[in-house]
Image (tube, rainbow, N blue to C red; front, side, top):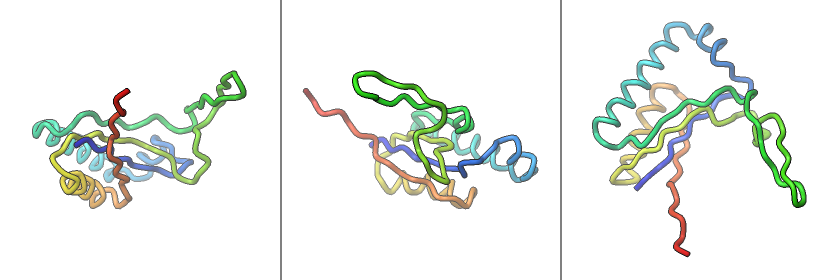
Length: 122
């Protein structure tokens, strides 16, 4: 079963400022993420994992009548925005929770888990 593990950051999050502020912890976190990904790759469970660029550089395409309009900024109007994700292909929900738990224990922030849906047959 495939699951997406989502990590979030404050809407005003800036990677460069965060890295400068957190110093050694930021370097440890990057090492942790690389090691986690390497372990998941070795076990065959990692489909993909990516951090996202700052939300201030995002844009949104929305419907407007019969047309579409492109606007600056992310879709969500919230204090937290998606910062990165993993897609894992694991044997069970419990395994997805185990992986998310490793991340949560290190970063001390929640991870949202969503099952990857399968398109209905047409």
